[in-house]
Image 1 (cartoon, helix red, strand yellow):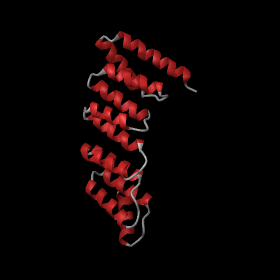
Image 2 (cartoon, rainbow, N blue to C red):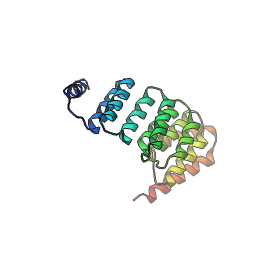
Image 3 (cartoon, rainbow, N blue to C red):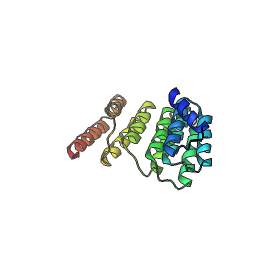
Amino acid sequence: MEEANTYCDLMIKNGSRLDSVCYNTLIHLRCQEGKLDDAFELVSMMEEGGLESDEYTFAILVNGLCKMGHIEVAEKQLCYMEISGMRSNVVAYNCLVAALCKSQEVDAAIRLLHCMKLKDNFTYTSLVHGLCKVGRYHMASKFLRICLHEGNDVLTSAKRAVIAGLRSSGFKNDVRKVRVALKMAKLLRP
C-alpha cells in the first residue's frame, strides 16, 4: 500500500491526470488505512479534475465509514448517492447492513433491507447473523426462509446459528420449517 500511495502521489505531484480507477484505488487505500479525511480530499481532487464520483467511489466511502464506526455518516453518503441519481449499489448497502448488525442495530438493518432494490446472499447472511447475535432467532428464521424463497442462500454458519438458536429457544416447529425450506431450496437449485 505504501508503494501504491507513493507512486500515485508522485503522479499527482508531477501533473499526471489520474482516471477514476486510479482515484478509486487511492480512496480505497486511504479508507483501509483509516485516513477518511484524506479519502474525502481525494474525492474533491477527483471532482475538481473533472471526473465524477461513481457508485464504486460511494461503495468504497460507505465501507470505509462503516469500518471506522461512522454509521450515520455512511447512511448520509448512501442517501447522497441515491439523490445524485446513481443506480442502487448492493455493495454499499451491504456494507451498511453489516455495520448496523455488528453494532446490534438490527431493526435499522431491517428497515434498510426493505429499502434495498437489490439483495444478495451477503445481505441476508449479515442480517441473519445479526438477528441471531441478539437472540431474535424466530425473526432470523423468517428472513432465512425469505432469502431461500427468493433464490438466494446464506452461509452455512448462519443456517446453523438459526437452527441452534431456535432449538435452544424451544421453537421446534420453526426448526422444522427451516429444515423443509433448506431441503426445498436444495432441490430447486439448478
